[in-house]
Length: 202
Image (cartoon, one colour):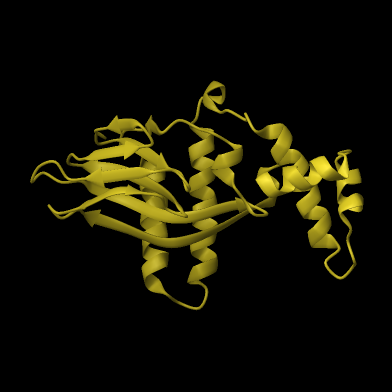
């Protein structure tokens, strides 16, 4: 049900041999990132965890999380990568669905083909390429979820997110109406005072 309302946009996509000075420390992006490592070596830190990705690994670096990266030798990464937004209403997908930081996929021909198409359509810049790029990004996300162990997916914030989604959906469908706090609080069966705090927190 969450995924059926998913909206996706691709900010940028590429196939890059990273320069020796490839580095950024302690920043918080507003977009998600996929790195599919083809060759080379480097370093990532996502929150408090450090990684040295290997060829054949697909890394997800989610939006809103402090992270760093850098080259560690002259043998730098050759990688497919993209920055993308994935939201359900105004909620980041990976705030709802928490997944492993990386998966080992080896030289998966289907994933490589999808990334090749993504980069090609992003660079093409034609009239329809935005739609095609978005469609390919959906396919990459579907591939990603299909290759996860279901046990590794965590819906820890399901309850509060589900309630917030109900409220946001109601607001979206009734933008032309005058909507009260009492009306919204009744949707999720909250006291109006508690609902106000809940809405502000989220």
